[in-house]
Image (cartoon, rainbow, N blue to C red):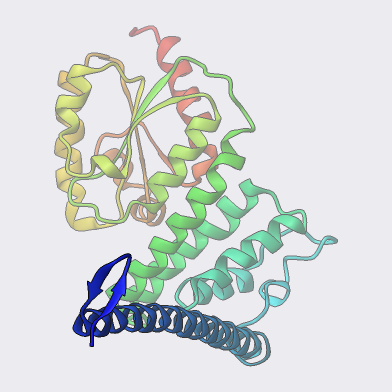
Length: 311
């Protein structure tokens, strides 16, 4: 028996199809809403799980990891006997202690100790000359005595370079006046250690000199550099006696080919500190045994040359 709607017959199969469609859409909508609800619940659960893990991790760091680190390494306040307001100095014991820190697995401890020293009143210049430079020499001594291997010494020197870079802005801001003089600083031919050279560069810049060269120019041809540009002073750093003759040859060519025919030559490094006679052997004008005094030494040499009757 057919039903009528608006005087039109209605097939029962159409009614069944329509009902199925309606139920299907309703079911689909319900499934979608249910999925979204489940997704929200899952997201909330994940968020709570993440927050719980972070809280547990934070408590572990605070109550377990940090205390273990403090037991494994001295705190910044205990690093140096020097870091006392009443005695802003650096001792031999401090040098050895800091050398151990730059060789330790945790590089942050060394930086924390430097901050403590500065806060206690020790000047950046004192840190440069009385701590960092002696530590570099001490690391070299450890290597020579086979107490450290090449990798360890390289790691320690790399961390000293990091400390030097961090202190550089505070060190150089003491003087922004330039004196118009130029110095070329280079490692001697074949020389691998450049930390002392970097430190000397810092002192020259603070004294107002325009500094050329540096460790980044290792392997560069100094003879070509002095032919292209004017330099009042050329400085070399050397620590290996096997390169002494190569340095002497280089200085000889520089004196012949330099734009500045009265160029002053300064040498530095542990080799010349131990053997002052090598200064004349390589035909240098003087040796600097203290990076802080290198600019004043260079100035005295320039003054002496300009007042010399031969000039």
